Length: 497
Image: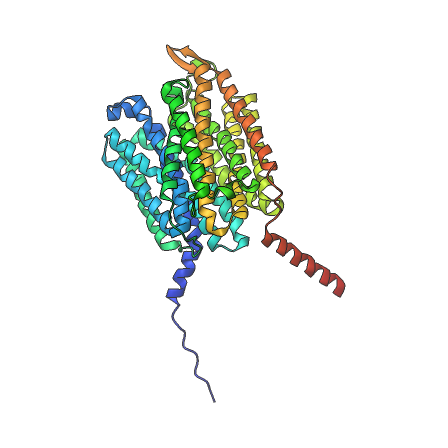
């Protein structure tokens, strides 16, 4: 008896959509990290013209950078803890939405007060990377996790490298508000894509949110970072700066005492003081310091007038293009970082990355006059940064419980932020001290730049030493199991032969 031919069934569209969303999770999260870095960078080319455009002083305009730094430093650990408690996807979407609202405010206004408030809102986006890394830990299998985390960590450098030339082009050929309309559209797209493609993580840590701890950390960090960022302008020995540092020490000491006695602390300090976690945070601070000097100094060096004897007199657009190879390198080297971490452990990757950063600064010291050597040295520093920044979250992931991933990575990003703020202040102090007049305007000397490179290189070597002092960390459990299975299969094959 003939059986009827099977009737073809229509494709299972409802099942296909979840599979598509799963494939897009990593690209969507990575694009969010890149967008965050672009948002932080696009204001840099505007700074020289903003006093004229907003009818404000240069000191007031500088708060468009300071406000983002302060709010990002404060909100990163706070939103990380909120993500662990209430849902990482939910908090990630909220952070991207705040960033987008801030961009819309910048697009609609030329009032400096509104612009500073908007940039403070955009600082919430600093939590995007630690929250995304936590989602990747919860959602991806171990064999895919390392490369995804490495890519996510590299988005900070990739976005910064893309943001500067993009902003410079817009500023040169269009109204400056156009740049913020563009980033607003990208932000709205990022919020929508995250809502559609990213699943909510089931891993939570129940408890009450530590409001007192959040307020204490906020007050302490604001005092600390405000003193560091404004010390060069207000005077390091001025009563305001000394008072801020004294207040920071007092408030943070009281906060530490309160956190140790809280049943549900904002930051688990007992976890932080473990060598594997604490030394990872120290390495993050030192690496952040060493990396940031590269971006600060390179831009100033190539834009210096040719009358200095070393400057190239490049435009803002050309300066951004000089930093672009570093961003491309970070994208290409992130898979290598994951493979090194899987084979040798992330602490080795971190130590190697910091050492490569030091080698990059050695190149900068050897020759900072020829453009190709400047680009080469900056790219080597970017390569080392990729290795180091990709290894730091992997170290944290292996050292903390899954329920505290976002808050622990938030603290690690906070330490990098403090390192960058300290680097900015230290580099500025060195360059101001080593300046000479060119055309009646004080310009840093080449010796000052070389001293800045030397300082950053020494700090990078200290970061490498801190990484090596982290207690031994071999390949991940999944890698060890895979190796044992491979050896077992090989032994069975030999016995059968």
